[in-house]
Amino acid sequence: MIPFAFHAVGNGTQIHRDLARSGPRCVRVADDTVEQASAPLRIMHGYLGQTRALTPAGKTLGLPVAERLFG
Image 1 (tube, rainbow, N blue to C red):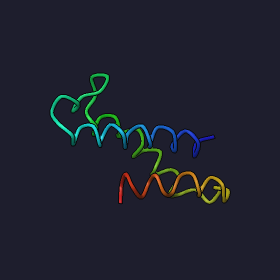
Image 2: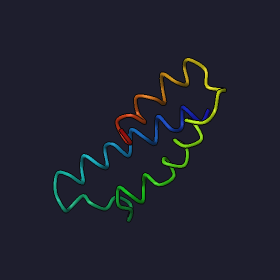
Image 3: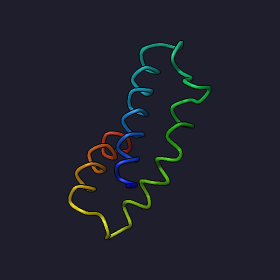
Image 4: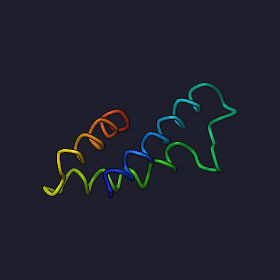
């Protein structure tokens, strides 16, 4: 379930990042900056990068989002 959550929240964070780049009005969403909103994802990304328990479906969901968010 963690890769599914990472995928969902990661896509939301990407939308937030795109909005923040569009102008100062959208820098904060729900009182968080993009950096603040992505902090939990960085933690999840670290765990997902270390585990050997990811299924192929988990990798398919998590890795592309992680690449777009963290390079």
